[in-house]
Structures are given as structure tokens and as C-alpha cells.
Length: 179
Ligand code: XMP
Ligand code: MG
Image (cartoon, rainbow, N blue to C red; front, side, top):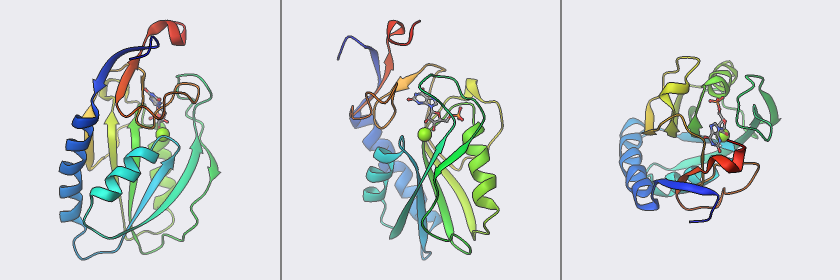
């Protein structure tokens, strides 16, 4: 572990096992249906790639990029679309795949934005959630892990664009973000 990381919160093995469990439950929900999974760039890249390969349900994949954070660690609540979906989701079963729900502001905005486009169904799967940080209540069907209210990196998650490629989820040492 590098000097910037304080501890490993979730190992690659724990993440892999959780994705198998989530994929099984998602497969049951969408049996016999066409499913579009929507990944939220950039953080959800790893969980999208691994979850998609763990599902038995055939899926199509699309991506959205939104911005609610700058280089810092605080949610602004202001969401901007940096890249919209390539596909029309009207009448489709859509599953939003997220890396992490922190305040929930980003996701709550995304749900109302995509919901207004007339999907047949709209549900959410997130690898991580910080219950103590919630500012809005969101109905999330599939949650991998509820974690403490600490800044985490790895497995897609960054601090100032670094650490996304770590195969595990770790907590940052306070000196890295000025703590
Ligand atoms: P909100 O607060 O709107 O945040 O739920 C959602 C987005 O903020 C990013 N985020 C994090 N990124 N470590 C990160 O690397 C964290 O601990 C963290 N908390 C929130 C993330 O992009 C998420 O989609
Ligand atoms: Mg994200």
C-alpha cells in the first residue's frame, strides 16, 4: 500500500464476491427483459465492467458523465451533464450503475432527469453507499456495501483523478487531502 493510503476498506475478493451476489439478484429481476445499464462516468467504469461480465442477463450499455464535484471532496449539489446518453431510453428497462452514493444529490438529480424520459422502469445499483452522509432519501434497489463517512478511493474512485486503477477500495491518509 502506498504512503497516501491509510487502509484497505474492501479487498478485490470482497468486491468480486459482492458483485456475484448482486448480479444474481439483478438477473432475477430482469429475467426475460431487455436491460440497458447506464454507467456514470468516470467512477462507475470498474463496477460497470465487472458487473456486466457477472450478469447472465444480456445487456446493452450506455454512459453518462455528470459533474457535481470539482477536484475537492465536497458535493456541490449542482449537477451538469458533461456527456449525455447516446440512446433514447423511452420504454426501456434502465438500471443506473453507480460507484458511490454520498450525499445522494447527484443520483437524485439523475433519477429525475432519466425518469422524465419515459423509461419502462428505472432502478439503481451502487457498489458503495455512505448512510451517514445522506442529504436526500433515495430508493436504491441494490447496494453493495454501506461504508463509514470517510473519503475512499480505488476501484474507479479518485482523489484529484488519481487512484482510480487500484483493484481495491481504500481510505486516504488525511495528509493527502489536507486533513
Ligand atoms: P453525491 O454526494 O452527490 O456524490 O452522492 C456522488 C459522487 O461524488 C463522488 N464521491 C466520491 N468519490 N471518494 C471518491 O473518490 C468518495 O469518498 C466519494 N464520495 C462521493 C462520486 O463520483 C460520486 O458519484
Ligand atoms: Mg460517480
